[in-house]
Image (cartoon, rainbow, N blue to C red; front, top):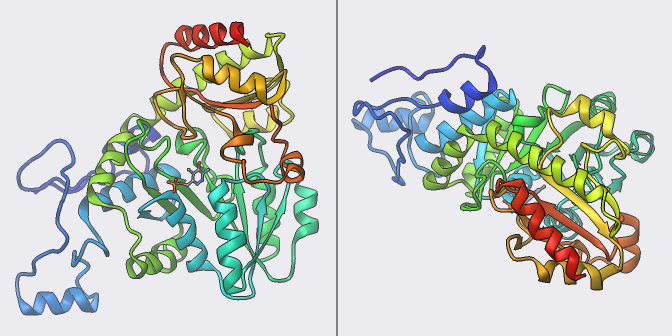
Length: 397
Ligand SMILES: *Cc1c(COP(=O)(O)O)cnc(C)c1O
């Protein structure tokens, strides 16, 4: 059996392709799927040593599984973290992080425009256990500082935000967190380690919905948490192995194969999205385009410092409100009408009536979700085909 290949000096692409695989006696080249719920011990004494923790080997796949461990080690290496735990979905990654780090009476300070289910988790469910959440706008560190409370324990951030692609200064918010004895948790779903490394910028914990770009082809649900050996490897892992929202070996295999092409895909998503944003900005039917790669974006310089590219998500406001937005969507032939993102296939969604449909008119206005706003998660089709489909649809509005 060959030793696992691992080298912390490797670049990101090499980490994504090589880290974590311990080749078995069969000499397989591609990583195997260990489809087994439990593991066999050589003797009663070995079983006892596994359960006591003296022998770190596998016991049961809710605790550890070699395929899942391969994905975890690979993503940890890419994000530059000591430890990674894989979870059943992005939401279970956020839930396990909160359960691992917070107690009754603690306060979360979060960026305002975050994933809808995350808002629901914070406001409806964590509040039942005496954990309160308040919100601050991504682009305004002074307001974050003013919103800190003595009981604040976690700062939670998505950057760029969904759907308006507001960019938050990770380094500034990490300094604020640490000056107040708090942790900065960053949901790195939109950028992935291929474009942004929150831990290197000062964040303590990175969260992923692997469902999106890590898979990249819209097949499986999964998530991950990356950070220190103590917080992630002990506290959050402890919640998961007990609570059970772990990743299946098959899904781990899909994601770890996805990681191998992540850097190439994120570069291509960003190229297509930049071309789309440039073109949309030139159209008279378009009021405004939101994309960090545009010079008109309010945090264009910050995004250029913090990210390797501007990412695959672009949103824009069409003139004519909801009627025009829906007409455009319904006239499309190639683009898919779905709220998912991070797929090779380009998707379009109308946030005001879908992902943000439950907000009151006042909440929508505060979050900047207008009736004419459309979000495109730009895929990897030929840009000319994406553009041609949108152009013919604009012609029908
Ligand atoms: C999709 C998403 C999540 C939740 O992930 P699931 O895998 O759907 O549970 C969390 N954060 C962001 C930014 C997302 O886009």
